Length: 258
Image (cartoon, rainbow, N blue to C red):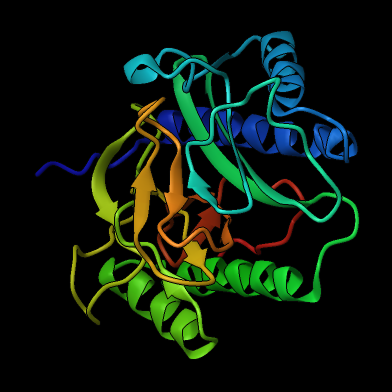
């Protein structure tokens, strides 16, 4: 297995792409409301990406037909935007964007509430965001990648949720999917030793019910929770620095560079 250690030029290119992907998630927020279909949201982001001289990494990837992944409610990931998927009051959705800017990839996703959502859904979204934060806190040189998943899973399970293990985070930047694999449920001190210059995603998928997923046989992409219960996710692109981490897809100064 070969893990690419990025140089300064690559890091800067990936940083710019990741921030563009994150800005897509900002500009789409006012449009996430009842009565809107997910293809409409996809088209808005596609236009924004093009206006910023970038392209979508999703479109055409292994035959994927759209610019983004938009996953409502029980859809764990890879929901295909459609004019027939119309948002309704109380839905929650994840929008996942990966941009290619000047040849570099940036990958991030975020949860959105459609109108007023239930307290149960709100708590699950908050817990999922905390899972991401716990994973990010483990990023530093000489720590093991398995500790990311260990602390994510320990918290999620303590709160009564399950962690999807059939999908994982991954190296990113020069290619869409690189080594290493970042598991969101793992043994303590397992995996690979982190080194400065490594860039990968952390993207925990947290389910209200069982951890398993089922892939839609009609489209071959849409992954749903096996019991139809709510699934939530957040994702950032992370750089291992000399002393800690930088969240490359952070555009709101939420995460101090360590």
